[in-house]
Length: 151
Length: 134
Image 1 (cartoon, chains in turn orange, green):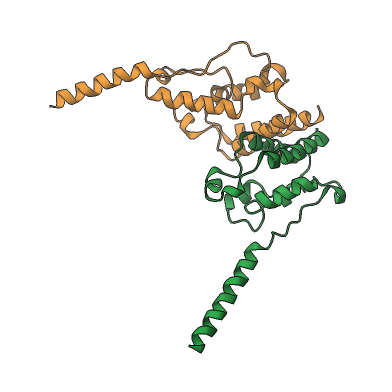
Image 2 (image 1 turned 120 degrees about the vertical axis):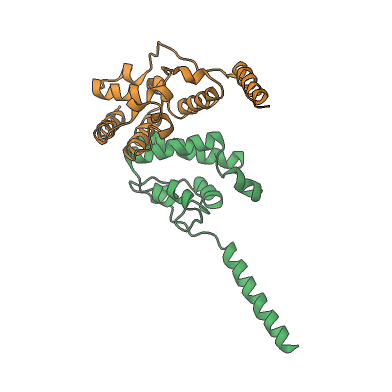
């Protein structure tokens, strides 16, 4: 009986792999990207890449387990939602008010420790930001917002 | 019997006064365009929509804390620079996506739904306000 249950679960798991879903596209060339179009220090750029870009850019790095159903459903949906909210790869094409709003949200979300999401940092330890790193990003965003306002 | 009639009369009067209070329009402190100084001003057509469809929740006396925390129209007009710009951007997005009033609210009170004309009035006001800031 136990053998049959285990076998059933195994067959179901294999069967599910045919319904993985489509991963959001990754593009290497992003001419409108924030980091490509703005003068940003390497320290801040590095924080963006490790803590933000997997969900908020077209340069997502998919870990191996993200291709396994049902994890894939969660990850793909999460990335689609993240890009819909903010996609730093489209930065230069955004309206000024949208840029200002993104920077304002960044200072709040990162400053209050709501971003990166805990569900992400559990699997990506390097994306867990220290107090100093949060302060660095928040200060940068405030200064950059003032620059955008002058555009 | 007299007592009963008297009691019924008092109750009726009480209920009527309650209804009258409910129907009284919300007192708004929005600054119309003509009176505005440096604050974010409202056109009269935008004000009429905001008063009818938004202030029930997005004002200091609103019932929902979440709605109050997100936006209070009276406070919006005191914002300036980046804060005002960011809020206007969000208002435009919410209007474009038809996210307000919330679906649950519209389901319960269908007449609260923003008509296309009302949405267009708010959109026009928000775009014009943004243009001044940008």
